[in-house]
Image (cartoon, rainbow, N blue to C red; front, side, top):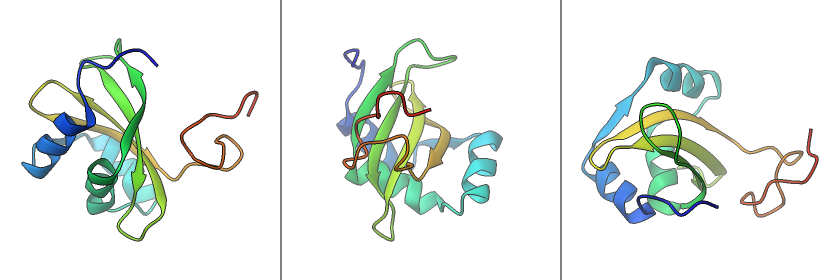
Length: 110
């Protein structure tokens, strides 16, 4: 993993300060997948960064593995500019693509 420009603590601080900008894409995906906004924030508050995408469009982004409000493993993708979190998407990880820890991608999972 590329060394992140920020830490999970930075994301948690922004999340606790209600500094999340919700894109229409993120809201659509959450609605389709029956993921609540509180699930997204709880994932960040309980999770850890498992992948970092420093060259993402607009801001560096990352994949966080955490827990939803109903105790299911959840992945969130969001950008961060040092002040605001930019929600991109969230999903419940698939057993076909992730190892049992849901933090390690399976090799040749497609």
